[in-house]
Image 1: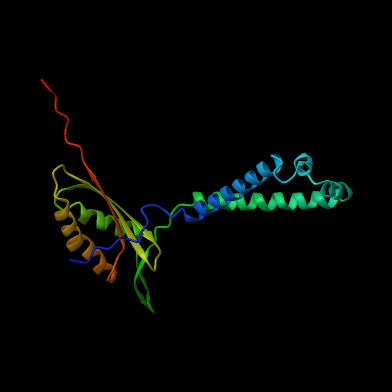
Image 2 (image 1 turned 45 degrees about the horizontal axis):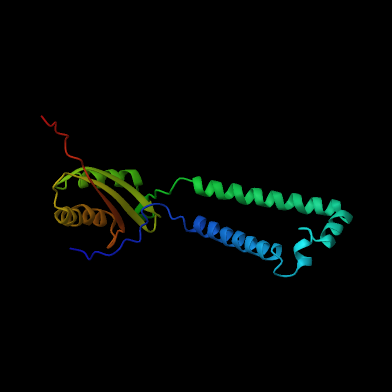
Length: 200
């Protein structure tokens, strides 16, 4: 039986970029708000607290160079719009389901599609004792594929036996078919509810 290690395969697509960007914007907003409170409370002097938000020198420069300021504002708006559009497209883009290359030869490549591999693993997984349904998805990349399995188990199923059979038969067969020693796999187990019984 292979050694059990925490899988590097994410349960869902990584949101590290989105989280990092939101945290950065949050920290900047917090710092700006704290600075406004400190200045507005008069902690840095009454004169600073009573000054207008826009610096008079900056306001005068904008008035003297209205056309240039308009161009700068327009360019900044377009850049922000493009960044926002890119962010939305990136967030809504479907997750990659890679096909796997089994053999590379001069006559041609032998590839197995993500759907075919997922269906084969699903069929094998549903033969495991105690498993009623299985859902399988390919993830990762074509050079580093991985699997996501969601297994529905009958009530009273021995999870350890399910894992042993899954590893020794299903995943071992998938690794052998792909010619890989390791195949990162994220497994989610669900317990089927028993049939409802009427109380008489």
